[in-house]
Image (tube, rainbow, N blue to C red; front, side, top):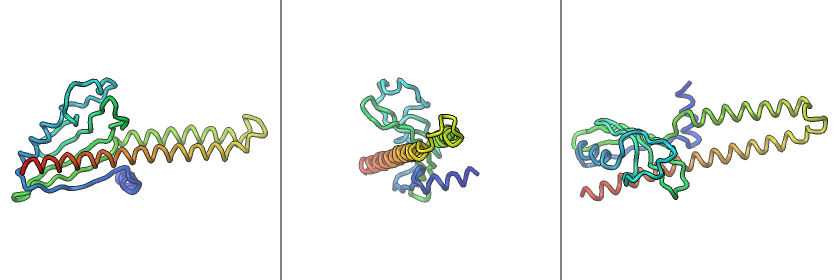
Length: 179
């Protein structure tokens, strides 16, 4: 079930994957990621007031990482996209396989709440609880629901794309500084 849901999220653009190869030893790449990542998951409301200049918060291990971009005070992005990846050495190259996605709870919770609320109100509109002449409200109500889903979809997709592009840019800057 989870695999099918992940395939669906990849198709709609809520999960992005990419790989990067470097002509650097693995320990240098891991050290760079550690230097640019605050350890721990500071997902609190006051994260924007942190004095750290590191762009990421999370954990970096010897053969992988899990972090997300730190939120800033005047940045309007949510910063919820998680960046996970594996790091391995292949002869004299280091390969990073990366996945940018939201924690599964966010899309699942939104879809579940949306279906429950809009299903219940649609049922009430059809049953005539709000009066006899409320049937014309059903198409407007469903149109509003479609617009809300569309806005949510676009926002989450943009967050994933921004998370991916920021991380790719940071990796490219690291490579340019290393040569």
